[in-house]
Amino acid sequence: MIEKFTRWNSADFLLTDADLKDYLEACMDEARGDDRFIVKARETIERARLRTNYPEKGLVRL
Image (cartoon, rainbow, N blue to C red; front, side, top):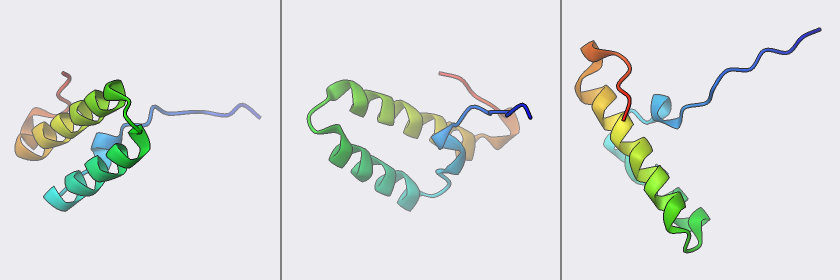
């Protein structure tokens, strides 16, 4: 049987301001000083904000 995989996008699951806050806090804990990790987390948060603020636009890529 062939397995099918889909791309994971955390921004799809960040729907509220509380979700965004919790996600950033979790990323800060995981990063342990890795600035690149935090930059990627902030990019994900921005994609989530764009989707929730402009859902009629569909997928918005940064």
